[in-house]
Image (cartoon, rainbow, N blue to C red; front, side):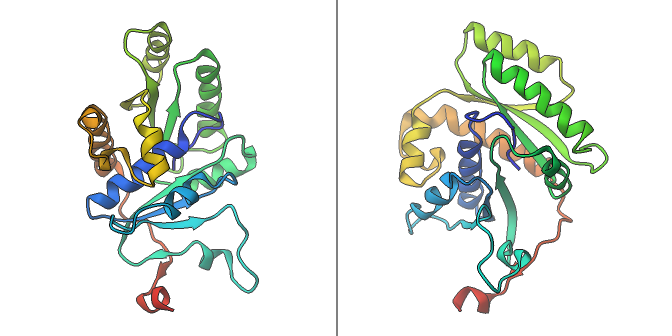
Length: 229
């Protein structure tokens, strides 16, 4: 799950780029969009048909009449990764449910005083209300939209060093992510020399997730006949 109660910290950018990266590596990938803004859903619908497919679930919508929530949330058989794009500012009563159903929570944080304080409070809620350690849910931080040698980033780095939570990548502040999202692709799928540095960040994230995820998680699968129905 990509989570942070602070809006505008880049949760959707992280989620869609994770999904496209995993799919391009040959992994069965499902993207579950809990955000009513539906940005991940629109991105998935815009994805070119010649690229590796990504199954998207519009979880922000109630199931249609006659369908259960469980059936709505099913994923294709052969799925290796399920990625949750979560909304900002959700009720604290939902936190423990989100934590319990998740192997790893990625927390994007921006280099600003407001974001740092908000993220500190969110991490407290994950540990105290969400009971992340009891559920054995791993937490990891992504420093997002960073620019080197700026005071804001230096302050963010000081904050991150105080946490007992790994910082698994630092994602550059670049318009390449905006351009990729408009095309329904991930940044690593862009045919541009200038995205090489950004691709390296996603390899780091992929490797860390591969080494820390729980492969025992069970899903409700779509059977092949359901996909063709």
